[in-house]
Length: 264
View 1 (cartoon, one colour):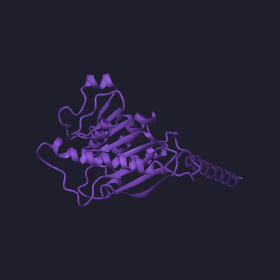
View 2 (cartoon, one colour):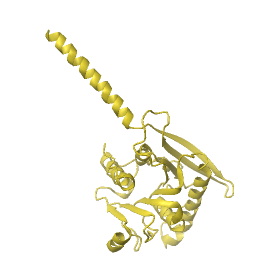
View 3 (spheres, one colour):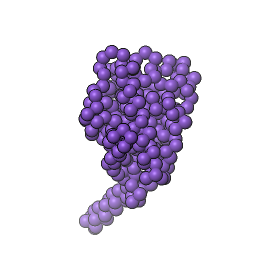
View 4 (tube, helix red, strand yellow):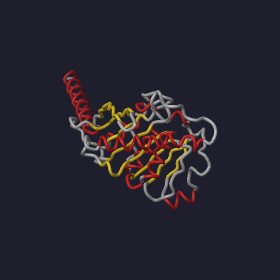
């Protein structure tokens, strides 16, 4: 009798485990990535893009039907052509919520190096302008390929120099942008406007240049969110960060965009 009772309990445990696995699979969409190479013939320039989306073959549905397009710009890579793949921790989370994330590689090995001294705003602005042109080209090139997504109300997300690119894009083309999120950009001033919505996460080890960030009064007036991360340095805001650092960033970004904390 005791053995029978144990067998019944073991069977019930297995069934509960299988049920839990099925429920989990239904709740978490499978994210697929695709490497895309675009050629801007007018500039004789290759643009590498990593596309993240929730696969349609999964039985799981996106956690929300945003169908937004996120243009993600990596930090300056010095010619490394793989840096746009270093943000999967946030790209995967956004894709699971129904977004199409297009992570763009802005540098090429033969590009002149970025200025490190002098008037950095003036000297680096041509690099940001090139980045804005890249993003516009990606938008026009891929909107016909990904027809289920909204390319007219973009979400811009950028780290460091990629954040400067994102802010310049939002300043020049505010009608194309719904939200801008930066990870510790430091040079390009945030436009003092109500739209697009702004979230900027700040590292613990660097300060932005004067006038880049809005004052507390401006933040309140324009509904902007500036959040300092006391336990995260500038170079820890990509996949190289700790699990705790990445989780904090995910929570803040998802709460800003979809009201979901993204807690695991």
